[in-house]
Length: 293
Image (cartoon, rainbow, N blue to C red; front, side, top):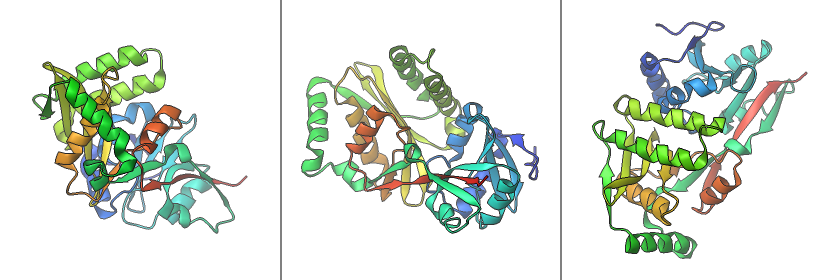
């Protein structure tokens, strides 16, 4: 089905991937939300719909209680499209700095920072080498894990990526995915990534200990200089396993990139502490834009 013109919408479908791929190629994204992998995998949780306006893809969501919009996707200047939608009572979320700057002097809108959804950006070389005193803790955890657990690094393909579902099942038993909506949505999104692993073109790997997969990671190219990590899960009962999984993967997959994006912390203190411990070099700030009054 073709994508309809605004103000008509349709649900995001797998067949829309070429549309998004072309739009992202024309204007490489900087925010972690903007891969087709994330958009499709989370489409049910966010109730994503899409339309066309001024040669831009307009992605809308109803997960915030009312329909909101994400930054227009494509090469064209998004200001006119945003103003038109704002005039119809819409509002925008996860807006990157570049678009936000277009409205800094606009008296008709309110701009609000959204720190819980800011992306953590790291130098790929630092996460690979883990050199210097600031990474002493990471190196010690990795050394401890390697001294205690003989392990095997496994590169995923469409033929073996299903193994990762066992890790998710165990993770959800511990975390209580059945009773926490956000975790249940995350589980569903990961299952979509597994089901359409080859379609999305993501890279993935796992760690086996005693022939049992205990950790895995999914990532892909966000733009020419950045690799974005979508999922990193590990058995928390094995200290150092998270660190080994990330380091082993990046040592193989991230050397061609300048940066690694580990996405946002969602305001969760434990996740925030973990991501800060890897010493980000920058935060990719995001904002909300709405009409005044």
